[in-house]
Image 1: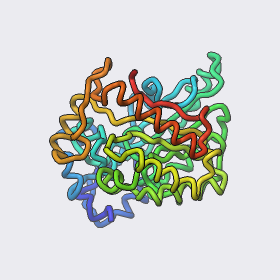
Image 2: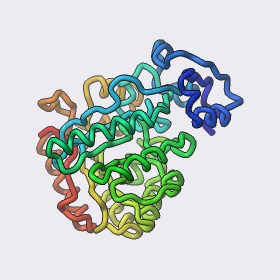
Image 3: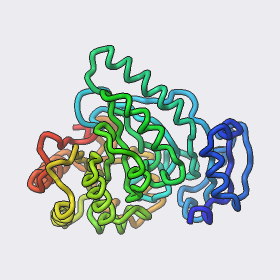
Image 4: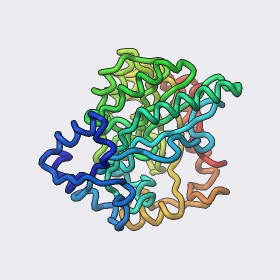
Length: 341
């Protein structure tokens, strides 16, 4: 239980205007709590090792301030329209050995932002501006700095975004997750422009590298349940980790998915190989010196990212694309994600 993990909860005075803040504070009433002015006055001010998340975390409740929407990197999502991400939280309860959050913040503490009304207002304004400039559709993504579904049962934020996108037929929302926690999604009506996407890895990779995440079998069944009830679903086969038997592992993954999921109705699927910034790679080497990730040869691409050699990546992506198509995913909805060729 998370209430045994959080050592302390700090909450901004301003968030007390949100009923959800009161619910969270009541839910964790046995955890020491402290009212503060700003999250930034405390979060990350003292360095905390990333792996300390396993046994000692603080929870912060605050408002996201400053720029609420940011443009995504190129090839982040499908299509040619503008893509943005918004930050609903900092850090993740899961522990994936390749995660860039290891070195992004100086603390693994969890920060939840509760001003979803203000984020939604920015989404509406951005959509109107982009449509006025000639774009046909505008995309927004959640899950850049924290899993979109893992804590949604008690953050209660999904209702706000459903209400927002119900009024924006030319905008689309993607919720990215490695969690099978779909109960808060099922509490909302299916919307064609709200897509639930699951990051998918072979069973062995999930067990060895994606610590604490939902088993891949649970993700498959969650996606199938959503799809059967009319929710659009998508998948990210990213990052692919090269191993001697990686092709067989993905064949088994696609076969398992095909037993439950209507593959021809998958909204989209992204493909990508593992990649690191120099800082990220140093963090992986420090935190997981025996990781299966570190047995490969990496080269720096033109953006300074450490990736597999170009020929190797192209071969992996080509074979993975072929497997995805044979599994029934329409070729026109498959795209390469942020590969930097």
